[in-house]
Image 1 (tube, rainbow, N blue to C red):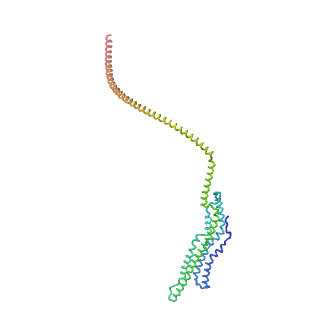
Image 2 (cartoon, helix red, strand yellow):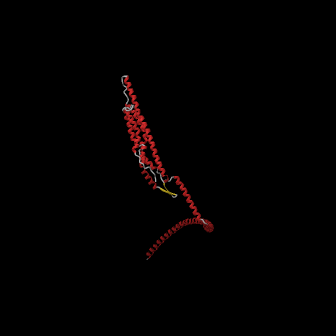
Image 3 (tube, rainbow, N blue to C red):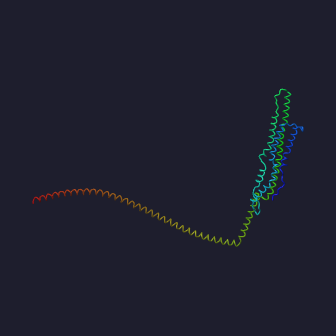
Length: 356
């Protein structure tokens, strides 16, 4: 359980503490203006310094010293969020239960929410700037009229100018002081906040795993696992187990030798079959060559026969033409003889008729 300082811090005393000295200086200048103390201050300088003081009062709520009260009064809610986060990220290593995570985010976010960092970052530089601006404004306001005719009047105007310039520098001095005063309380407040955060983180140290612890426990756990594994191996590997394992190995070797012998026999049979197949291919190749030679001879014979047949057909064709010519000649002769016989027959018939 994280131990916190339950004492509440009130904001108003811190606000008044930061405002005290700047307000006292303004009151001192105001007393000089109303001639209560021997300090010459012009009205325009009082007005300008008052405006700078009002701006400073606005910025006080963003000062780290003032914001520390909000930080202390609301840190318990951040602790609850951190406890919830750690509970959700618990990790058991080597029998030890811690949480793994980064809790810096919660505290950084809380510090950023208690004030506006943008205002806090420009405050130390804005007050001297306002002081210088107020100085030049006061000088411009107190600038006398140099268009006078008499020397006495001119000297009076110069006296007024120098008096105004002297009082105008109060604004610059006041602005520079406010910057120094702001930085003092800013650093003091940030130191308080950082110390509280560091103290809380230190209390969480034993509840969080860091990288070195995780790596160390990983190594230790790995060594323990290896030791357990070696112990199991030692318990398993007994003389009886080794004898049994040797018997199994011998049996496996016998089986392997038998398989090797069968493989050699199969290889020999395959070699013989391969040689026979090669011889068969050689015989087939020889027979194929012989068949090709016979086929070539047959082809030559057929070619010669075709040539003889072509010659015979051609010769036969010539003889056929001659025979057809002779036949036509004989037929012509037969036609002539037939014609003559017909004529002779007719003559004989006519003669026979006449004789009757």
